[in-house]
Image 1: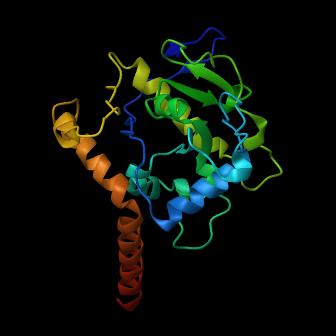
Image 2: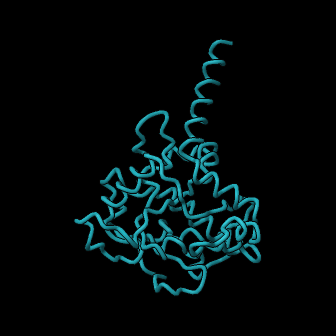
Length: 235
């Protein structure tokens, strides 16, 4: 049990810290996710920097970041996190690519978010909490209201924000915390070699693969689920 400055407490449990990497998948569902997050936010939801080139559809330097990582979609489904997405489009839609699981961020902010260097606490006025040195000068600020309007069914999910905050707390308060992964791979870099020589190589390689293939693996997963339901009905 850890007590914070406001006498808040966080229980240290055996809940797993989900391995996070920046997503690289480019299926149609991902493109829709990116478009909807951009349309809703139009600015970095963390720093407040507005994209003045949005009218020209120029988004370099801005990323549509997933709150819950794409590479762990199976875990998302198994734990029933789809219930936290209120704008799903049907049974086949797990919700992981809903804009409710996304925030628009500057690319460098996205990297820190996925690394669990900081998070947002929706139970404390959406305050941004830094778990490492605050080089972005965002600690103590609040998540921009543009992405959390209670009357907007596209708003970011409070439950997923709470999940991310808990993950960040667990990752940074369990001993040495979770490893930081290298993401700066200049042209010509042996990316596979860098990953294999880095921390948690096998798990990271698996996460990288699942991130790239998640759009296809989900179709297979959902198809298998329907197949299993049909078989149970016949028995």
